[in-house]
Length: 310
Image 1 (tube, rainbow, N blue to C red):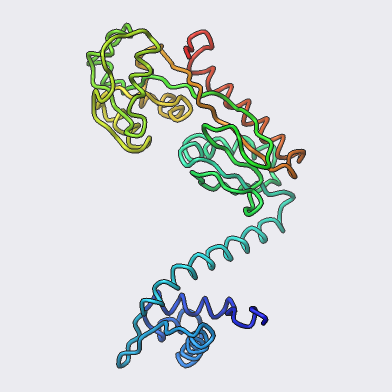
Image 2: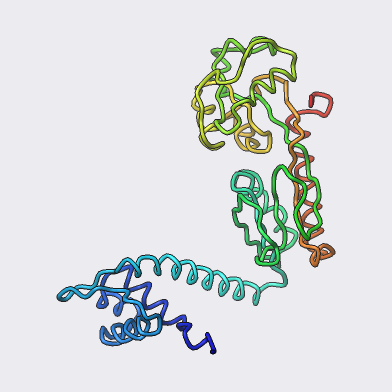
């Protein structure tokens, strides 16, 4: 049996999504430049193809059934993927090369995206597609050319490059430090310490790094995400222990200051992986080399190598 006979055309799926979004065949017809009768016929054809009732007809209204709600979730994802594929194809047709990059959300938004202009200035025919990915994925089933990730240096069927180990620094707002000047690491116990909830022991690790006694864990307000933690530090709520790359902009514009010249390097690392079949691509290698130099320069601006403690 040929299963393709049962697979609806993309046009039917778009009509269904539009009708489901509006909960109206008439408004769907207006958006799609069709007649109401044409929309109704396409929905009936789709229901027949699937052997499912997607809408309940109540007087002159249409309402999604439970099966229709479930189907809408899947159809929306299919249409989104199709639209992205079309945009990628259109972009590629006007440029010599596209770089599809996956990155951790915070790394991508706070560090990589603001620096891309520098790379593109000398690579004007390159088109960048930057996407956020928090979890590992298989290159074979994706369109990505490379992926930045944190922690595990192993990525299946790829060549992985270690970019750097994470360097965290105590940072606070200028106003906070004016009220609570810190001259020595021992004085950190006298001020509020802002915590990242998923790194609850981070301050304790910093404390151990500098040979301090006491318990610094849970010694202050807690925040779920780095962006929240950074904003809390800017607002003057206390001192936050933050990865150096995340706050380059805040340090540059004096929104935050290094509270103490006491950075901490950890064994956790930032890496970039490239699928084996793209490992020798000249543009990808050039981009990775550029990123590595940018990271090296960024860290040297914040703290010198002899200050780091692991």
